[in-house]
Image (cartoon, rainbow, N blue to C red):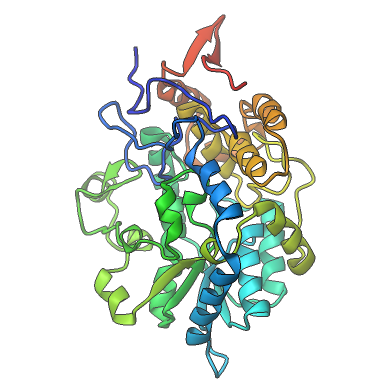
Length: 400
């Protein structure tokens, strides 16, 4: 029997939402092997996950008026009197990031520079929303990584980690701080702390991104893992140079300290509700939804930018038993948009859906054939979660 990849051997589902205790607390996996132990979302003695407990705290214990006073004080300190850029906002054109950019500019009179780490392959609606963001009144710096290198790293991340989105997530995390340092803008605002969704609750009590997350990828360290591969191997076997890896290079802590740069989360200062951000972005930034729902879930407003994003969530379903529908339904249950019963129905219907619409795009982008793709998928399945019946894979544990 295969190892459970360091996941809890007993599968439990939150009694209030739909996630399980198989959810790792990091999206940037550097390895996925039988030898490691993953830290996963914590459940309390009542079977309630940290994300649901945090949601209750948000609604009942946080003084959001006081938090906004903190925000105003911070922005007053950084606001440019001459109209120069005074805050960097990483923004894809998606509903959450454009909400942050618009709020800072129009409610708090800041002068944001938006920066974007380009998708692997833009969807039509993703490109429309990106230009709608720019056309609604925002300057933008678009960083598009070396296509040859990014394709290789995406392929390796899929084959070695079952995580084709890992190089993208690394670049997306670094693009804001790196542009801020280059432009000498000491304030960066991202949207939400991922602790909103089940990481350690205590992380939500800080407005700041931990600098260790910003400085973790030193591409001069040959033992560092990127796409499940040591940097030394990327250089020696795959013949990548330091310049090829520059887009994934973390800034130095000395650079950050010299500028006194801080990376803040808007979710610390404002009540975070993705569904409400959809309405806000639609009204203020001409944000558009797709004509058809995103495969693997029930919504038309999530996962719109990149043709490869659906495979990130499908691989989460394969490795951890939770896909895009679980992610979306859990948030909407906590926000009171749907009931848990409705969420269970949606997850059981859509989580297993294969993202056929962009399958050929994925194969072409990574230069992988169908046989290799499906073999990799099956090799990643955890026997603690999956069983094969009549040549068909099914989860052993059913969400009820």
